[in-house]
Length: 311
Image (cartoon, rainbow, N blue to C red; front, side, top):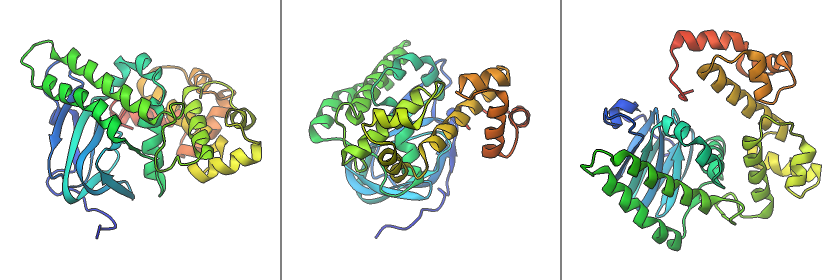
């Protein structure tokens, strides 16, 4: 019988980059296998890809939980509480990915079909509601991926001074394969994508994340989904628990917060970059979402010394 919730990990509930990576310059990737894995709720300042190799248990993310079984894949973004409960011999392959990895390879990753589903949409859905989306590979897909997983483990143990670029290449190959497995265009199906309507909604979510700076309408999204406006809106709300335009606005605010935190761009330019009509339109929605203006948010970030991408 699984617990309804996990307590915080008593030994250590937060891991920083320095806790898990060496002090070598440009180390973005670290991989290892954790056997008989069970851990309380914890967070970290980096991304993590978990692949269940064998055994059974539960993976808890924020206030939700889903089965952890052989070939399950979980992506955990920074500062998201998660943990594992082991039922039987739960062996988990871990890939730790520094946030700067996504900056360095931004263009390559952006062009991977399924990448935004795997790294953004999947974790978002799993942490928001039950019946969540996650990738479970087929036996054939696992066999295809296994040499790359073993190759990354070997690269992590190399005495070679230039091993970091090899680790990056192996990680990119693994991310590319997983993105392809979950890609809607590739016919990828997961627990939340058992019908065409759900797959169409996720495809529109991916479109929003790639084109948030452009003009987006419900009519245009419904056309992408090959549905009427009413049918698309109903299906979108079933999957996301919000309207399509609420989702668009929330994502635009999220990207705006990143730009405010990481750049010195003027607020009016940030508004344009994130798809808002003008500065006043942006400020109105930002205050509604964050209970403070963009200017107040920037001051708060500056005072708090917020780390990159650790929002």
